[in-house]
Amino acid sequence: AGIFAVFWGGGDWMWWGRMLVPFAIMSCLLVPRSWKEAWVLLPVVYGLFQLSVPYKAVLAAYSGKRLPSIGFQEGTLYEQSIEQAAYIRANLPSGDLIAINHAGFLPAELPEYDFLDMTGLNNSIIASSSNGGLHQKYDVEYVLEQNPSAIVFHRRGNFNIEDPLKDAHYWVGEQLLWNSSVFQERYVLANSYWERRGSGGAVVFSFIALNKSTMEERSIEP
Image: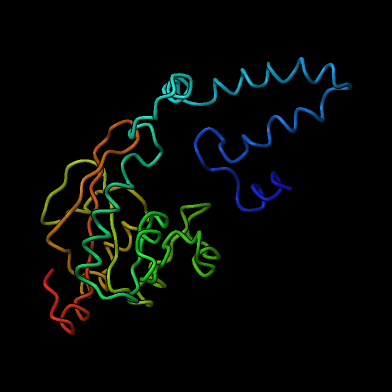
């Protein structure tokens, strides 16, 4: 049932097949002709799975140490999200709609706000879009129709402060939204931006675009 759910949901896009790992050993029990053969096979399978994860993760697991932040798939996204959550809470009233790509840390930290998952993992409209695939779904027109009070963007590497999302190549949904003439007319970037370390130590920046009409109504400074 678990394996069926993974494939029916669009496949295991996560690194090293992490969604399927819990089912691997159970699946091996179906192969042997006897329990004796199963106990011989299990150590072999367990050993092979050691090769399917980064060596740093294996070393950390057996040394009792915590995996370094740059070893996480999202790097220090959690720490960055805490800082952004503080900014949002200080500048936008509870109940406002915020459009995001990474729909985990910020919604968990800001339960009093509404969120729009622009990748469609938590949105049936975007999930049914023909644009993109798996966790890369997007629908620029739909996002703009929802008129969120703020939209969170990301990019890897250095940027030009005058056009920080130019040639970002972080996620096509964000890039197309940024290049939309409707977005450019309706939103302005906040003066603050945030830096984090991605997986492996790469530098990733994040920005928040604020709705101009919302700012004018509530006298919010960018």
